[in-house]
Length: 408
Ligand SMILES: Cc1cc2nc3c(=O)[nH]c(=O)nc-3n(C[C@H](O)[C@H](O)[C@H](O)COP(=O)(O)O)c2cc1C
Image 1: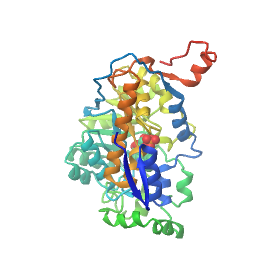
Image 2: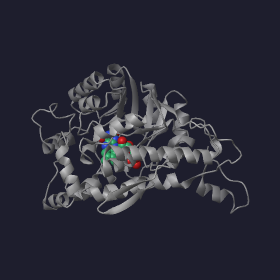
Image 3: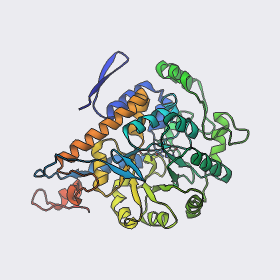
Image 4: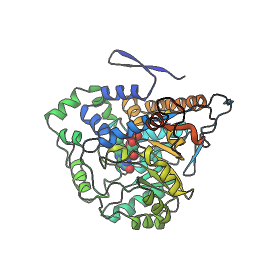
C-alpha cells in the first residue's frame, strides 16, 4: 500500500486513488486551466461513454490459482515497460505545473514507462531530451505547412526520440463548450474573469514564475512572425489538415526510421490500413472524448480492432482510464498496452513530478492486486473469459438462472 497524505489549504487529504489527485488538481488550478484539461467535445457524450462502457465490463475472478509470481511487464513499441501503461501526449501540460512536460517525463523515466511529448507542449523536444537524458516518444500533428512537420521530425531524430506517434484524429478541431465559455478560443481572450481566476489561485500563479517557457516550445521559432500565444494559436487554427490520410503515414514511414504508432483509430478497417501503409502499431483512441462527439468507446471496439490487426502490429488503447482495474479490463479485451492522459495530468496538476509518480504507483498497485485477485499472473496472458459485459450477462443469465455471455 502506498497511501500518502497531502496538505492543501490546511486540509489533510489521504490519497488513495486517481480521483483524490483530481480533487487536488481542481483545487490548485484556476478554473480556466482545469476546464481545459477536463472538458470534452460538444455534449461530452463520448467523454461519458468512455467511462460508462469501462464500468459496464465486469471481471469474473478465478480463485483456485496460485498467484505468487506475477508480472506486469510489457513491451510497448520496443520499450520494456514495468507495466503496460504509457503517458499519453497532452498539449500544454506546462499549464498544469511549471515545466510540466519535463516533470512528467522524468517521473515516467524513473518509474519505467514511456512518456509521449505532444507537438503542442510548452516544454520543447530539446527541453525534455536535456531534462531526462532518456528515450521518449514524440507525438506529431501533421499540419498544412509540411515544412513544420519535417522540421519537427528532424528535431525528434536529433533528440533520439524512440517512437513517433502520429495523431490522425484532428482533421479539424472539435468545439469544447467549456473552453469557449472561458475564452480559450483562437486567439484566447483574457478578460477580467480569467485574471481573477488566476489571482484567486495564488499557489498556482506563483509557481508559474518558475516556468522556463510561456508558449508552445516546439512551434516558437518555426512559425514566422508568430512569437506570442495569441499569434501561435491563430496560426494553429488554420493549420489543421483536412486531407490527412494514408499518404501521411507513407510519408512518415519514409522519413522516420524508428517505430511509428498511429493514434486516433476507432474503426477496424482504418486499423488494417494504418498497418498496411507502414505503421508498426496503432493507438485506439477517441482523444479522451475531446474530438468527435457521440463516438464509440474504445473498450467496446477493441476486440474487433485486435482481430483486424491480427498480430501484424501492436494495438494500444486509451480514453477514460482512471484506475489499474481499467487497465486490466483493456488488457483483457486484447490490448497490448494502454495510455493514460488525465489520470497523470491530475497528479501533475496537484503536485508536479511527485504527483505523476503517485499516479503511476497507484495504477501499478491497483493493477497488480486486482490481477492477483482475479487469479491471473501475467498481464500479457490474461484468460479470455476474465471479462464479461455486465448488462449482457444479466440479460442472458435470465436473472440468475445460469449461463452468461463472454464477449470474446
Ligand atoms: C488536455 C488534453 C490535451 C491533449 N492534447 C493532445 C495532443 O496534443 N495530442 C494528442 O495526440 N492527444 C492529445 N490529447 C489526447 C490524449 O493523448 C489521450 O488520447 C487522452 O487524454 C486519453 O483519454 P484520458 O484523458 O481519458 O486518459 C489530449 C488530452 C487532454 C486531456
